[in-house]
Image 1 (cartoon, rainbow, N blue to C red):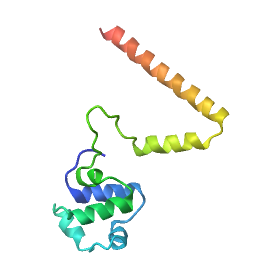
Image 2: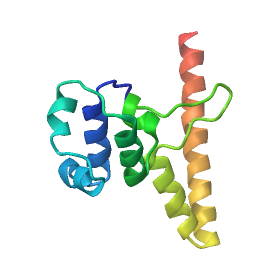
Image 3: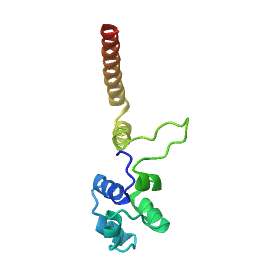
Length: 124
């Protein structure tokens, strides 16, 4: 998700990623469904609505408001949804399959980095 300051787009994208429809989410959060038109026109919701939606959607207020997670300088970037899903899947496997997955990932990374080095050598 790129930086996007239109609240509606951010809210809609998060709902889509979670397989949710915006109108039922608003109803669950006790927010007027009439807000949709205002948000589509570019208005921002009040802080209580942002907090309620962030809690319901299990996301940060930054993601709803700006389309990206805030990262303090020097801190690692938060995991993307794909990264989080991969970690969950990895943790669900028994040790021997985790070892196999790790070996495959290491091999893929080594191959990728070798290809990058070869490309630099040829171009430079």
